[in-house]
Amino acid sequence: MQSYEEIISDLKKRIFKPVYFLAGDEPYYIDLITAYIESKLLSDEEKAFNQIVIYGEDSTVSAISDAARRFPMMASHQVVIIKEAQSLKKIEDLQFYVEKPLASTILVFNYKYKTLDKRTKLYKLLDNHGVYFESMRLRDYQVSPWIERYLLIKGIRINPEASSMLTEFLGTDLHKIVNELDKLLITMPESKPVITTGLIEKNIGISKDYNNFELQKAIGEKNILKANMIIHYFGNNQKENPVNLTIASIFSLFTRILTFHYLTDKSKNNVAAVLKINPFFVKDYETAAKRYNVSKTVHVIDLLRTFDLKTKGFGDAGTDPGDLLKELVYKILHL
Image 1 (cartoon, rainbow, N blue to C red):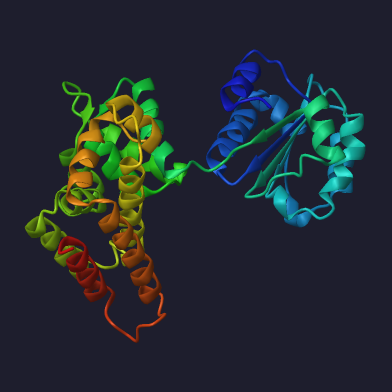
Image 2 (image 1 turned 180 degrees about the horizontal axis):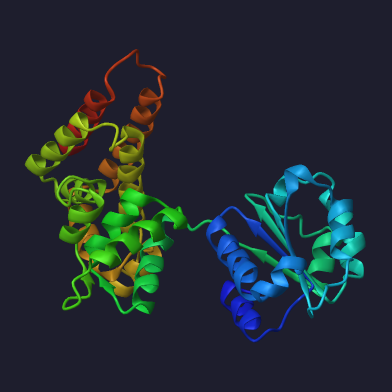
């Protein structure tokens, strides 16, 4: 299975495959590959007669196959792009075209939020005669390294605290992450190509002092004053700081603390690798493990599960989410 970089490299060299089936639950790379094919493969004159966009909801596999079998007019190739291909019925019927695709057609499927069963004949044919690309959503721990790589390519560095702050706030949606990063790049001073928490606060609106990353740190240190200030801010700004996301963030902290306790090799590099964190933050987990032994860590995880259910209406009738968070954090800090 080709990577995004390999596909784009081949396209730039004008090495084309007759079918590109772009699947998966992360639309970012699917959109990038499609946009490149749509904008770069044909000249403007060629596009007029040789490039069409079809929407899966409005078409059938049979009609798409017929369009793909047409020969280009005054061009070496025609491009047929199927957007929202996940809406197509009987996608397995595509195998009859993929068995003998027309070399002069570049047929592109945007099959977002779904994947093909790799045991099917269609998948095997695509693997042999075309490109099957699967774009999977990043895991939480993969986001910070991704942000750092994205910026490094552009000659920009980001502080570890700033990277973690963005990860906590933006989640794993790459379109959203790139949109916010590009906004930051516009405001970057040329003399100092480093993204800091201050720059993020100023241009994205995330508070550098009151966010889930800082709350994790305060709880890990058992800094009662700082933790209370943050949850008070969250209580007054619940729309921007949903309690369920905060609980998920604290849960992530304590599952890592528990893992840390059971590590036999507590060297900096091994801890970073196992916990899937930047080595810069290993000291935070060393501190947290001293504050919360195994028994306390397990108890906190149990508390988090209980309060997560309460925020969803189980076992609690109508308590304000901000008040539930205050109670939860109080119980954690006073173990």
